[in-house]
Image (cartoon, rainbow over all chains, first blue to last red; front, side, top):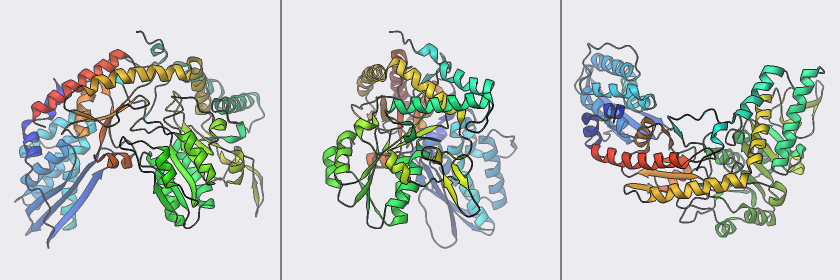
Length: 143
Length: 400
């Protein structure tokens, strides 16, 4: 079967079928950011709540392919409870990894490491990226 | 059955199966040679130089116009070179549309439109406070004469429709629609991007007011398209682009334009692409559009009959009129599915195909699209069929 098996790992399917932290709260203090990839229909909104420089909560809402939806779910789990500086570092490094750019492999990407598989599928890099880009934007909104 | 035309297309290789002609066709060697001839041997501008090379380039350029005009039974002054179908329709909308359409007027279009046949008219309707009306599609998703009749009124000024849907592959019954539109005094702007490569179009017999099409979907180069318009209409239209070559006289406070089609061709045009498009038409004419069409219909029927039998897929355009199959693997987002096909080197497309109103009408976010042309074979159709079966199995095992 080859390369496709590298993409659809168990973790991805598990998060795709049972997404964590799905649904926006949209109450006081939450910042949200929406990214749509019109060419393939991926459409994701990420919201985060940051207090005392810690990501207290991270939620996602949207629709799209399995890679996009699963990456949003994995993101939300990883980021919850992280210090903002750590969260930002992980997200930056994750984005470098999926884009096949040099990245720091000493940083623990936890479950998100399975998305390294998209490097073999350039057409899917965006799918794996937009939730994480949106998350970084929510951090920026907190200044 | 051997496909005798395949050898003319150097892009074809044994590893991949190209089923995306609805987005872009391959180019035969004859077209490539013609484009190369211009760049290699001439590479000078048209209509400007008095030297031999420029005269030769101008001759090829205008001979191309004559050939393309004859292809649709138009005259040369009614045949305007543009960047493509998109530019052609935008020119009509932004020049004719903004000038002729007023508050309360109606523009009729359909949910089958490619964005290039819809967005320019949405813009005109917004700017001029006109009403944009949609012909209700049949259960199958077709434009019907009956429903068109129910939509048109005395207020209708423009009817902007596709001849062949780029997602559904259905042919619009345009002849009758044009007759009815003219009874109401409306002009018809026809998007022929998916039609010209499948059937002979006679603009005089159709009595169509405007026709737009592109080179790159009919074996020609990119960056070249045609706007046909009735001379009486083109004469009334102001050019959108002003600059070199399109003017007749330039004064400090007043300038005049050349006659149509030249007033619409400002600046340096894509000369090589014009010449290449003419060669593509020559190639198509040598084979015969009706031969191409019947070959594609047979290949389509064979493929559709096989795909229809596969449990776990949904086909959205049953019995299409051209070689386009729009489908999805059940429960599999099209972008996931298309990666599987890409991995097996089957080149099909996933998404909304620049026609979001169609996918919205179908009630789906996106779909897969396979489209055939004359260089495709039954072996390639079999690969598509087998890969579809395997894909259903693959995603089922993953748990989709």
